[in-house]
Image (cartoon, rainbow, N blue to C red; front, side, top):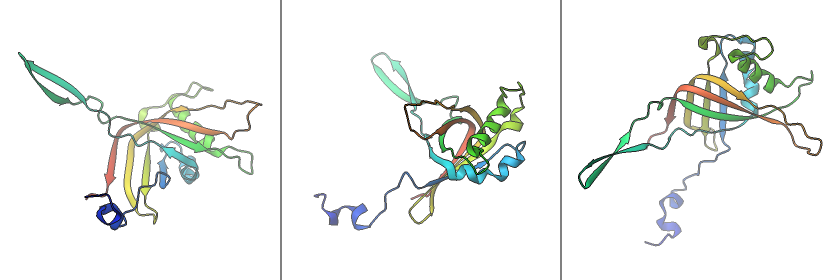
Amino acid sequence: MLAHFNNVTVANQNREPVYLNLFETTFEFPSILPNVNKESAILSMQATSINLELTPDLEVVKQYFKYSGRQFLNTKQDNSLAKFQIKFNVNVTDKFAIDTWNMLKQWYDLGWNSQTGELHYKSELIGTVIAHVHDRKGIVIRRVEYKNVMLTKLSGMALDWSKGEIYSCDADFVADTWIDLYQNI
């Protein structure tokens, strides 16, 4: 059968593509930061990208007997662990604060505050990050919820007179587990 419009299921059923720019990210900060939790909607509006790499390559182990071999999928120890990165726009408020970066820095400082040396227990520095992928009408088609999330890296500023670029910041996170929900066929 030729790939004519009438013969292609996705075309004649008018199926929509998944757009990579239709997503929303929401944040639940650690409970030790109640003021930041009130303002977390600002981060949702400033998150410009997130990677949802939740299907890692599976390793193969081999077994041999004389000249014949068999292959098996190997279960990794860290299957439940996740690493991900979110890129944020950073803007200055009318009070000359860079709220996006400031909120992320407060979360980062729970792991290690470079100014005071202060440290916190894991229970005080974990939060939740949820990514909703939706279609053009706003219907959620995939929801990924990262649990026990910790911020491990916050990019700094590389100032340069010769460039007129706008600052955005990258934040790296780790999570103990995640829930990946999507519409089933």
